[in-house]
Image (tube, rainbow, N blue to C red; front, side, top):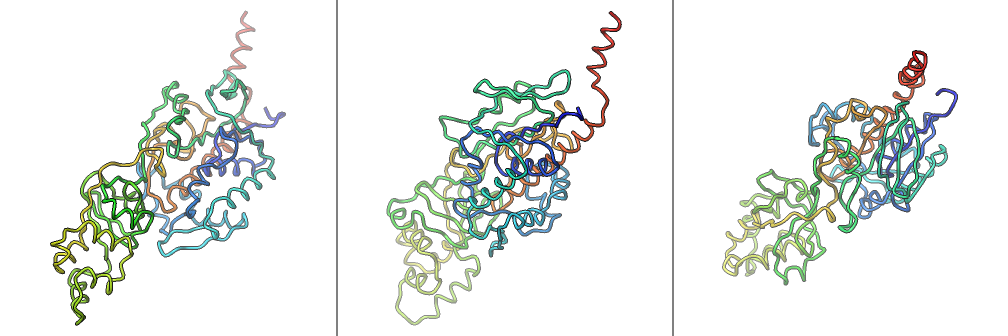
Amino acid sequence: MSKSPLQVAVVGSGPAALMAADVISSAGLNVTVFERRPTAGRKLLIAGSSGLNVTFELPLEDFPSRYSGDPNFWKPIFSSFSPNDWLEFIHRLGLKTFKGTSHRYFVEDMKAARLLTLWTEKLSRQNVQWLFDKRCSHFQKSPTGELGLSFDDGTHFTFQAIVFALGGASWEPTHDPVQWPRMFLRKKIGFTPFTASNCGFSIQFKPEFLKEAEGQPLKNVTLTSSKGSQLGDLVVTSYGLEGTPVYAVGAEETVFLDLKPDLSEKDILKKLNRTTENLNPIRRIKKFLKLSPAALALIYHHTSQEDLKDLTQLVQRLKKFPLKFEQRQGLEWAISSAGGIKLEELDSQMALKKFPGVFLAGEMLDWDTVTGGFLIQACVSQGFCAGQGVISYLSNLRQQPKSDSSNQRRNSRTKK
């Protein structure tokens, strides 16, 4: 084994896959990246189309609490590759980052394209090979310990280790859903069906409201549901609402918006009653509260004429505006997905317990979190750990004598 170079496959080209490939190739191992599409990083580019959050300002010990599942799964992952490690990695690529008022970190140009370009160029300099239009259909382990990968086009490759970072089920067209779960289900690997996460909800908005507000933000509002409360910005869409508060606490029920969370109901009434001008309630709100146009349109078009004339009732509604969240958007419109390979199938190095040498990372695993930098942080941290796991596994492989299967075959021939 030591006389021939060890070959590693990375299947996928999202953040988890790229980080794993970076760690492994930096150690001098031969890496081939397989991607089923014609180019790398499609979902990374989608995620960064409206501002790429790369991580979140939060004490390291608090990060595990932002994710589903056992915190003990997450603690060593973020300890191995922390948010600060990730920011430093980005800076070494030649990009600057900044922290927004929401405590999220962004790349300076707010887009993912430059990050992806610099990263893939770095990997190419580290002799990573790229094979595109390769949809993996099967993997297996031979009696000698080698790992085989088969693809839909009939090609087959052999490696000493494999990292699968195949992504979740979001942003996939309905006519071409993810197919990789079949590979693992056939091998009796525990799997939780995918569901939409970090997605909007449909609301029966009036057409006249949408005519004024579609595509507009509801700035600095608090959304409250049975799942809790979340402050942030929302965006009015043709079907309802999108935004971090919706992703964090959205539920199929009547929820409530506080359109002016920085002021109490009493303070608002005091502020609106100061004027001596003879203004109706909605005009007072427009003049003195500085609400966004979308918030004003929401109040005007979705409040009864009777309440619009009553300042006290209108302020109460402004502080607790009811909205009926009817239906969560589907996977094809979701930012991320929940579900995937169950975490208990992995060992501490991100390898499948049933298939030593096969490592998993990223959104193909069964975990969930909110947007705001938490998704990509988890992916790169898992990718780093999977890459380190591969290095450790292959180091042990080099030190092992000839495989037990080889000895068994030799002993069998001797007995005959």
